[in-house]
Amino acid sequence: MSGATLRLPRPAFGRSQVHAVAGCYFVASFAALGLPPYLTQILPELGDRQARWAGVLYVVPTVFGALFAPLWGRLADRFGRKRLLLRAQLGLTLSFLLAGWSDSLLTFTLALILQGILGGTFAASNGYLGAALEGPALSRALTLMQGSARAALVFAPIVVGSLSGWLSPHRQYALLAVLPLTAALLLAALPEPAADQEQSVSRPDPVLDVTAPPVSLKSLYTLEFAFVFSTVVSFPYLIAFVDERLPGTSPLLSGTLFALPHLVYLVSALAVHSAFRDRPRTGIALGFACIALGLAGHGVAGSLAALIGVRLLLGVGLTLGLVCLQVLAAECVKGRAPGGLFGSLEFFSKAGAVAAGVAAAVGSARFGPAAPVLTGAAAATVTALATLLPPLNHRIRWSR
Image (cartoon, rainbow, N blue to C red; front, side, top):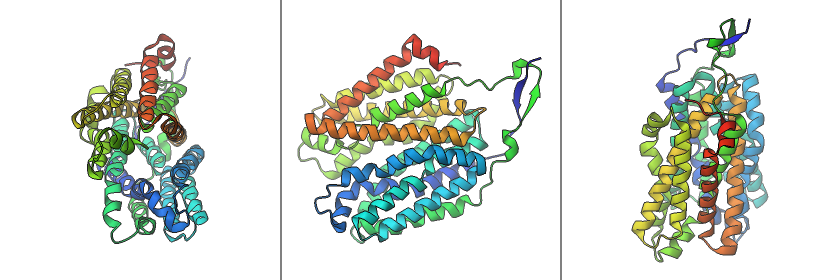
């Protein structure tokens, strides 16, 4: 007699709770995403007059966040997802206060290290949602979480820039610390996913076994790393690239071009989720293909209209890739501890971002501002082809 697993029904977790988690992540990420672009203005106040450490400090929170994300995920599975989500928000509050009050480069660097170690709000939020939802409901919630990240990435630098006339970006760290603190207070009112959600009952009918994931963890992590690398590698030097192709471009127009792919995600992600939630293989392949074409198009775009077109195409690929990765993650988490899975997924995501930053810096220094976009195009092309090859297709075990 073979045993099969039948998951017990989960308690009600409505749309309002999902929106609350996504909204809290949005407000808490303002300082984390909005202030790093202003490091070249912050560091001279701390003694680094030429802001030589800006590039290194930009990735410090990412590096330490990647190293500690799996640990926090496992602790969430052991001690409670809500507790660890609150810990992440309060950790950001502490690190932002220290950064805003710091009066030396050493103290500021320590604050950024603590931000990486104590933060991790995105993985903590996903782990919390993964314990409360499953299947299409979970993938839709994860898609909404990515929307919060994109929205913060678009609007936070604008808000920080607007406030700079009254308060320096350095001191804004202390001011914006109120946002994760507020998020923690709001999240405290949400329920802890019940412990009995992880329980199961044994049934003799093997037909009921629904625990086999449609994608291996190794393949999911590989796709996550490749996706983040191929998209993020174009970010650091895009403004310089635009200035090279269109001399005299205003900062506002350059910023708008930077934001276009993220705006595409904001307006189309939920529609893409509805269209591709049952066929993520097609969405992943199309996503990487659009990323490859969009980034390669940057290399030949010589007019504003052409740049807008390739940025929009990149946005289509970004949306397809992000949405379908959330669908795969939602399926993969079934039968697994959500904190550990999303913590590990965050590790590979941040590792891809760090690798992209290094590749962008090296490529730009040696070959100019166009090198990062062409590097991303090459990485996306290889991944798009790999998803269609029989060996990888077999390892991924795609299923409808």
